[in-house]
Image (tube, rainbow, N blue to C red; front, top):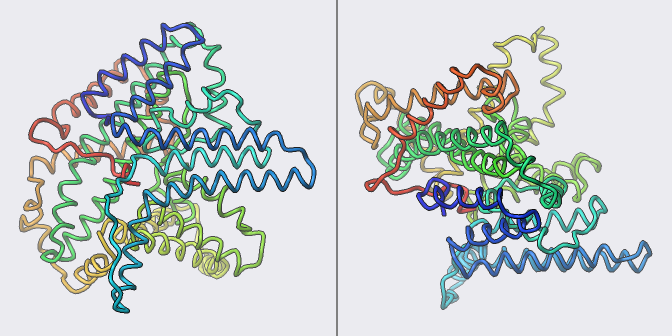
Length: 501
């Protein structure tokens, strides 16, 4: 069930209405039932996987909590936590990476003359498996570290793992945030839930998310898919513009899901973490990863990078830990070498940035550069954006060979005249569509500037404005979605990009 589908437009109001009027003791039960129904709309069989992951991590958490603070108890804690991690990772690896592993084995077999191995069945990737698996594992590790107490109520914990707004594409919530809120559900009376400002703010967030998805992301995808689908006939202009368009497409696509999820949760009385914070305003790759997919980057930092030793060990080991973390990030995004290459590129960016930090500081001092100047900060942001674009070529391409082929076309086929001769209109977006897109991008820029300069989300900003201004913005967004949204019988409804991860 997609957020921008007709089914969700019926599903969500029913869930909210019933949640508000049901007795306190039944609210959590209702949300759990709604969450499992939401997931079953994708694949009923895969519901057993999320249930298994839930039960395993819940039981492991309880067992870890019962171990005493003795040498034997600590050994038991390690064995229990290790078993829980292993079981969950085995399921994730089988469904997400088994085909990838088998393809590489068959490639090696082909080189040495051995017959390839083929599975007698097809493995279907369950929607959102990476998200809920990481969320459940994060809870178990938190219990192991003593950061939280084990959740004894299976109902509350199951709702934490399967909460439908953020179930299939994040954000990857932490137990210290979402689980704590779920525990307070029985105390939420009508007075606490029926708050106009909170509900209105959540609906505005959802409206903004639909605008990003239906007006911007899905329209850009037409141009991006057309160019990358025929990259062998394209030159520098089309490929660079398509990559830049993809950078905005993937941002609007994923940020829209996170925004709709946060808005839906807010309507229900929950607060989800912010997953994107104007990442393309970043002035370094390090800052970019503090703004892009925040829930994943912080998860990898807390549960992989720091346990590996982080930056507490020597310089070489620290850089190795950093690279391992980014390789894991690339592999998390997809079972393919071009995703691994994307992660390696960002790992190299971080390593080079760390190693050259002292040299760059000395150069700035010698040159008398004033880092407070807008021109300097703008230059930093521009360089950072260009570096991310180069990495996105590997992310968007279907293989490493294709990525290098695209880079080759960019370098050897300059065709700047394509900017003015109408060539760009031959990739599915005509002049009228382009005007709509440019206007929508200007709106996106304005909202991003509000977030960057005022440090406010759109709903918070509008909440402080006059009634006429607030409703003007709402009507503009609604009109754009209704008139220019990419939907209808002739439109192939696009899934959110991160569903495949």
